[in-house]
Image 1: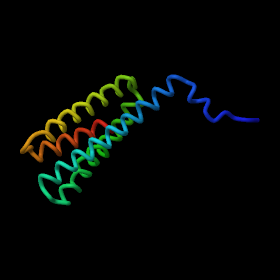
Image 2 (image 1 turned 90 degrees about the vertical axis):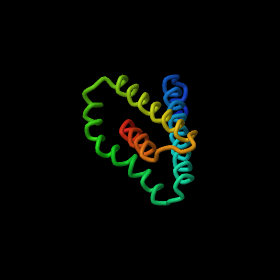
Image 3 (image 1 turned 135 degrees about the vertical axis):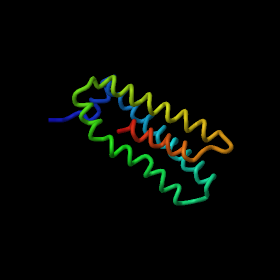
Image 4 (image 1 turned 45 degrees about the vertical axis):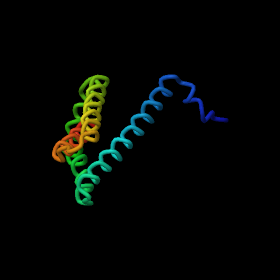
Length: 120
């Protein structure tokens, strides 16, 4: 019995899901690097770079249990659209901050925390 390893790639919905996941991951990586670069430019402090992980990770971990319960009971397409809209708002906020000459660090960390919350 010979299994076709690439049969799943012939399914159009799977190809779209794979492409959107790839673009989402690539965009998240670019966003993270740009935010870290700008925060380091402003502070020259490794501690502030470490706070980026805390700002994103803490809201993610705190909201993950409730997000899982909501995903189990709610309509998944609406939840996913809400989360992606929140991540878009975070990206726009960070894009504004990266382009500003003297941005507020607390607003940077608030945007990062919002992104962690939306990703949960």
